Image (tube, rainbow, N blue to C red):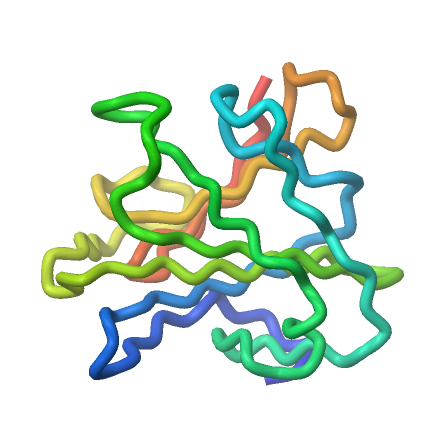
Length: 160
């Protein structure tokens, strides 16, 4: 799938390793990517500029992604705020003159337990999901929020 196609991220399972759901979001270029949680004030996700073609196929194995540093210092928000996440999540961020690309790999040793509830676009089903909030004004009060759940249900909203 090329950059001009408009399709949600795809989930893929790799075996015999723990299953991994791979999400690829492409959104209009914003500015910096903020730390993930208040517990990680010193943590930074680095966005890398690329001139290479980014394939939007749900996989992070093309040349462009190899140049992006991996961020994996996530913490829980519930039920135990601030402790390291139980399952590894990796994020890579690329950008070019037109687009911000966010690639996420979510590892889960028991993929059968991933909640994949279908719903209408912009609804909020109880399910496993990935959420990317962009504070484009760097004011820590507003953000553009993009969400996709494990079934591919999309949601976007303005946080204020």
